[in-house]
Length: 241
Image (cartoon, rainbow, N blue to C red; front, side):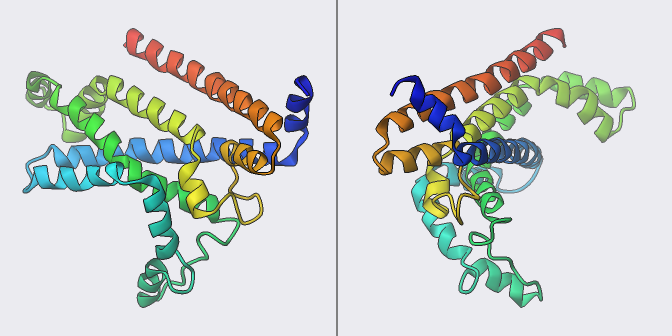
């Protein structure tokens, strides 16, 4: 009891696997949401047709139930009857066993997480883009800067607050992720897609309430230990710029 629960939790092989998978999952989802969110936001703030409609389409998955999305993609990613592999097969590509292959399970869930969450990142970036004064871009254009140099030296630095927000929200969300993983793989096959949250839940299901409570404390400490320095670093960079 007491500290013994923490000692037991740390000694479990599931904890080391879950910790590694949690960090990998958070890094993958955070990186893709930042990159794709910025790219989509740039497109949706340009002079294209139906911008308002496209913004709604991109943001819509964010509003849908995570469990519902997980169950839907479990069917779509079925290795034999799933629509995704059928489409790949029609162009001569043999799709993997997305949620069954240990090397693909965690990555597959991460891709679905990105599809669901990139809309929020896009909205944050759109807000950042439209808040940039047009005079800055005009001055860069007058100085002869190309579109790439104007983006790199004007737009990107001024988007630092939006980027910091997206990174923090996405990274913390990735560290705390549970419902999508549980809906799609339940941590399987084996323990290959287990994260700390799913390890804790499995312990709770098995009746190890003290162990699961200790796991929740550990998860809080892990999120704090990773998110606080990241937040400090991003905010320091913003002040220095």
